[in-house]
Length: 404
Image 1 (cartoon, rainbow, N blue to C red):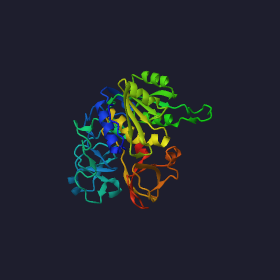
Image 2 (image 1 turned 180 degrees about the vertical axis):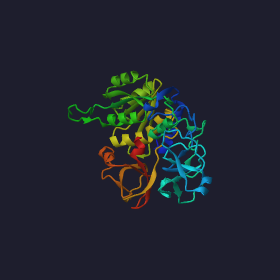
Image 3 (image 1 turned 120 degrees about the vertical axis):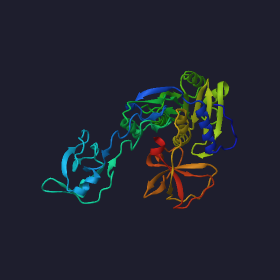
Image 4 (image 1 turned 90 degrees about the vertical axis):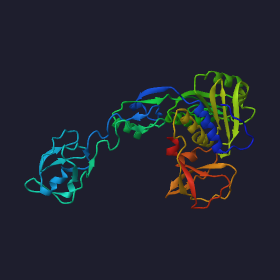
């Protein structure tokens, strides 16, 4: 990445647009064919085109009786056949009706279905229809959902359970998707140890690695675990040199200028570095650059800052590099259940949960508190220079949307 440092705080939209431009210029071009069993979370690289009509034949939308609408003048009608889903019916005999069940194919000659609740079954087995019946009533037409040749899913669609269910309904066993982005995940800092190890004085457990590893995998990335890199210039340089076959190096910690900022030093000396100071809280510092042609994004080390900057900036970047069209998380307006009397110069993302339809804040919004996110349902966005009163509408980004 070749990006320009700025001494002023960079607005969130400007940073996101710059990242997305870089993502588009380095988008993954490799395409793989994968089974729909293994395609969840992947990005569609070729359009899904219907190779058959869906449904492939007219079928009943109700449990009831298939009829020829013009035959109702001679009712009651005798039942000439019974049609279940998966069966092949005989043509409908004139002056008769067919007992039919939901999803069963319509018999030739029938043009309507009446639900079973609107008929009377007579003692002699004939059926009297109690309500007027419209032609094509309760009939699912052939091709009503898709016609042969229709583009059902466009390139760039992200494949979830619904999209894969749609592919299965069209009889498609495999899909063409973008190759997974290879992301090397590393943490920097002498203070970090992994869970299960014994803490020494001044050390903390590394939560960001677990947070980001699982998040990256849910986004459809291939994760290469680069572990914890100590604050030693030689070790940092060697670690980066060993990661030349990945698409992105994603690091946490050590993104501000300081004596222990060895990652930034290596990028400045041997690669490209841009240290952004973002107008966002939590998560002001963000490092973007490259090392020997490999893109590098450095997130702040505090857990809540990592969560916010990854979710709002790195996540869209990753998805766009893999070809996704829709990359920004959706938000919706909810009433605030709090007052906000201290307008700030940075856009704030507050951990909150929804209670009785209103956003309730976690009591401690410190960037070091990951428990706030575990308690919350999502993030409330408070725009720059804004004050809020209880009941004011605020944008809310659910974690279900952000983590998906």
